[in-house]
Image (cartoon, rainbow over all chains, first blue to last red):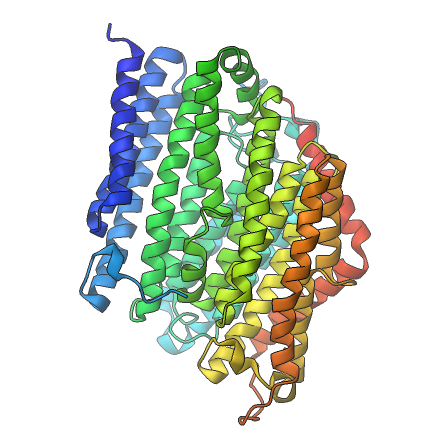
Length: 102
Length: 500
């Protein structure tokens, strides 16, 4: 069987990519995609840990299901907010959203 | 998994989720009323939501005080998802109060109070915060946190036609979703290290497996950092505070009041519960010194940046960052007898005080059309009662006796000293002095500065009611602190007595 840490490495790599994307991308839609990548990394973690560490109860699986359910809701709200700002400002570039500052 | 499952009484299931049941019923009433009422009568929807939340709060308190010490609630209930104790009861009272008052202060705000869905989303957020107050399982922690956050993103961006509000919403969302991802990765690590998700069952296996070798300790420290990032965002602590001033300024003011009070209180109770239970005893010095450093930077930076603000909402935003720094002292002093009690007490006074301040801001900016501090000039002559309410709030925030804030700060300092963090208490005292300056500046503008427009400011009934409730609360808690402190201490005891 494939050892646990291979899964964890894939998840950690995906998570790092997601974090990099959030910090480096300028387009807000791309930032939301990067956040989704982070959440998917968490899901790989949860399911792998469940399978290898505690397969006797379903906590990890239940957790993963809740994570992607919530992720869907979160993405929906995020895209709605992006649409509302695009209507007002005609831009989705994070750097140009700068009305509020001191 | 938790005790004998075969003979559970109905009250054991209903009592711990009474506020959630109440809020859900209220939510359905609000949504259907909004559907069937004529637009001209939609205002009553907000009144129903506000009064309903206050009734749910009273019912929960009444049922809870009689039942919370029942031995069946000495361990987590509902499959380990919720811990029903005094701490949960007190913080649920706070968030329900804040939710109800938010509906009430939003009533007369244009494009906000007449919208049924605004009140509905406030109720959903309140439900999430109520679950945060009691969550005792990593899954529940995550769900409650996200229920709250997602509703708050919508509320911050609620005024779609106003560019500032849309911008506040998207900024809050991007920061929040990012830190939620970090937080969640930390939770998945905690689950992975132990195979359990109940927070009261985590400490023992974590201590046994992780602290033995360097790799294990490193992994545990990583999980700790990720959790701190998530909580730091929610309580607006430096260096996760960047969203605070922008969101507070851009969001509709009733929403700002809600985010700065209820959301912060619920995040603090979750922080106290998770950090008090999850980390093994041997890791305590590490996370405590980390939070102590965070508290120092948070209060100092918050206060210094508040000094230079010209917009009242931005000033209150940095003030709320600083207040989070003070409250973190109570979390650092978790193992002292006063730690949790002082956090509960401080948050209760903070909810009342900040709602007072933001209500005055709403009324004044409705009249003057601006949020600038200089437009508070002459408020004492335009509306003496309003100026008095603001003075009460600002002095309470700065910790002047005999107002609630004085005892709040006093107990926090006492907790820090009791836990051996004397230097932290000294830093906090110095900070409180700096803070006095910018609070007093606003009072000076209201009482001394002249203004051309001396027309009296109209205060609606809803706003009068809110100011009466919160103002009386600040005075009563400040003058008769004893009973409230006894409550807060019993909350701390109930946490200490949790069975794993």
